[in-house]
Length: 588
Image (cartoon, rainbow, N blue to C red; front, side):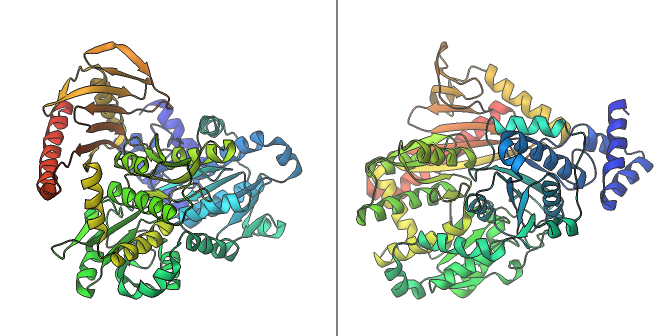
């Protein structure tokens, strides 16, 4: 075994405080399992731009106490340097939340005690809470940083550690690189006991202090209260929190407005083993199976789901055949945009300088919707730290009024009060939106068809290629490099008009590669192919999972409303052709 791996193992065994993680490594050594030891120790679990995320277990490339403590000490060191005056006065503040995952509570407490030992006042929830509430707490309590222990929608083997800045958004440059350097440079970890932390007054529990105003914030986004009071009982909702954090807030808010909500009983209680959903991601149809089955049994109108940390939201509604149909992230994102603009227009509060923000891998149907209401849609990199970064810029400069931001992976943000995606408010607004269109005699799917007839048929598909372990990282790097060296002039019979390489900040025509145009986006490992007819293909390695994601964003004009269903079928057939073509290009 390489000498540096041996040294990393010894250092880890000396510093890991949790017996279960240390024992795992000792058993691997005893059994001479060199391949597994290499995978666990060939690198430190990377503290990237979203913090940490990895498989729970012993090792430097796993989620455990050792890794969490070093990451927290590095964060504390960076924040102390970033706010030196507050540090001197003992005025630094941090908020910490955690979700249902295995060891989440333990990791959160470990982080809290290290922050307190470094002079911070730490605001901690006594039990699991949604990620959007953590973002809200940071801003409400004027914190300098924040942490939520979660692996979002990953399988049960994972946990993670999302890092936030004083604006309530996940860390962005230059703070991300600065924190990473501090984490790598940690020499000494400052710790304190829980009793000492509580006795000092520096460790404070904030449950009701944040829960109650957070509920009021969510309710404030509902603007048709009279209509809801009249019609709420006409809509029956089946909801699943997928064993996560959502039930506390979603049930409370919807019940307060009089909605009839049936929560899937087998999935209501928090459970980090996710016994009924091996992949608790509402993007995946399988995760909604139990909720849809219950909706059929109960004759419900809507299925709603939040992921384990409740920052993502998915929905299904009945189609013309009477079957529950899942609305894609792009589709419900467009429906929200349309409804928010329509409502603001009807209530005479639509700002002339209004902005809707979407990620670069999200359908640009929303661009057409925004334009139809006389406002702008702007794009940014994938991730809500970038989407909410636009909100921060608007707040600081006054150059535009931020209204709403979303991305295709079921993430939505409804205003500047918190700076992350928010599945709780998404559930409340989905219920209001369904009531509104139901009162007009149509469903959410009917309204989506109206948008297609007006703006064109926009369909999409996301393909994920998984590559685990150290070899997987090299495979993904090789695939992206191969794409960059290929001269791709057509895909599935559609001419490639433009290629945008966000890693090198340029776009160009494949026929005239030497003629490049600079693009004004931060660097990111993403390639985009803009095709004749308006469709876009995007390829990017995930920032949080061992996979390459391919986004097919297809658009097709609807010149005849009577042929809408035929045009939809054509669009799906063309998406299948795109998928085959991109697989051939990648040779997977």
